[in-house]
Length: 236
Image (cartoon, rainbow, N blue to C red):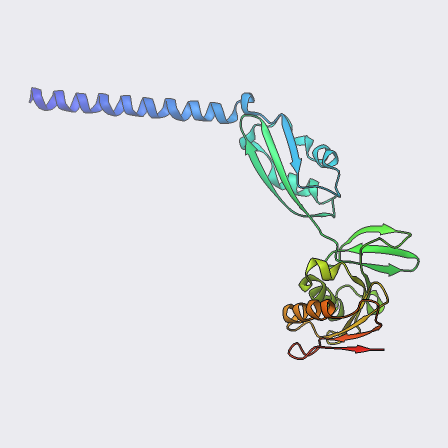
């Protein structure tokens, strides 16, 4: 009987000690996580080129002084929506007091002329910049009715995104009235490209690059890659 009572007492003591240690550990973790020692004091921003990183820091500095475990990510998202050039972002906590914001900016795909203003747009049709003069190195998108949500615009974007950088750099303008009649004009003497639909754009882009390499850049004419298995250059 005494041995049973002793074992029961020892078991209760062990349970009490274990519970006490667990409570202590939880308390220490809780105190460490929510302590002012781990409050946000530094915000860093990377990945920006067209966006001012300092402006992004200012936009979210309402989080400064907040324990890292209590940062309001919904509020950060709201604060960053004022920057239309931000396509996406990722946050990273760096203890003891730093929040890093990794930004992916929207990339321009072309320029649309609206009245006397050139609007730089991304593949989603988001306006990134406006200019009174044509933006150098960016192809003009001749969009019917200026519609950046229709199939013609989507086809033009698909074609441009399929081009290798060296070919894309030679594109002066893109035109389409439907999704199936995309055409390009190259820089230089204004050689044209009959592209057709955006179907098989990867094959057409490879074919166009090869044809350009075989053709005198000073010879006016039209490259026809609408049938990717049978491309041709027609001098004019």
